[in-house]
Length: 306
Image 1 (cartoon, one colour):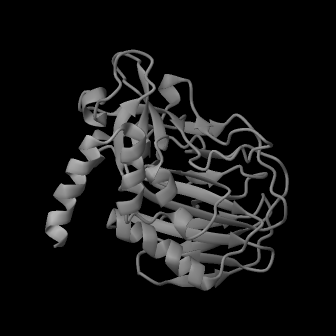
Image 2: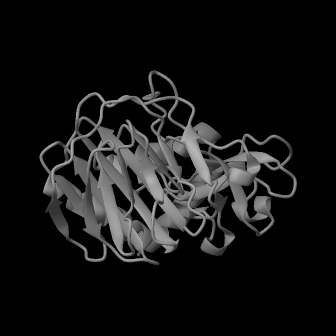
């Protein structure tokens, strides 16, 4: 029965108007994103934050730049959570696949959208933006346009607005691959005076900082994908590494800073370091449980297949 259902749904969607088609897609979508497991404060990714975002008509992941023409387009999200076609373009590029729009080469990333669109940064957007073309990360053709790569010392996307943590505890999550260099990549930081996850000072390390006053180092490995979840709560730092499916470690005490700062992803000026991300996010004033760690670890691992 199931093999006959998908073609029937496809015919139905084709016969409906735009709004009704999105409604039916919402009914049949089985996609599960991190936002279906936890409510984040801000979240960025090249898949949908949640099923609700996936089936909405307005969900988008990134705003990309054609490196030849300079045209900018948003990338819509499909009801299965993956990236779809271009929209809201500055010229004639709308309605194309990412590959067609980019010309089968890398595209620059001008904006990494906060998919919650909740204006958590002081009542304003937490979108991460880089308007200088030379400093933009890249949406990689070699990874089927699923990864955002930071390949130069100046590569960065940063919110134009500050976020102020409401209490001295935060949950941070990242899915990234450090494939060159061994220090100072920052896939999530500056969400309050440098509360962050970053690569450790040495190879095969991930460091979790609470403000500027302390860190916990989690064993990792280079040139591999990792989903890492950390809790900064003044009592312990909980870290998880997806080198194994269920590895949660407790480490030294780190207290989150409550100082206002702009969320950002960057290489911190390191000339020898390159990294790629699938998704990053943070939850204010919340320390997730060990079982939460396992769930938030398993979800991206299942989706991305690393």
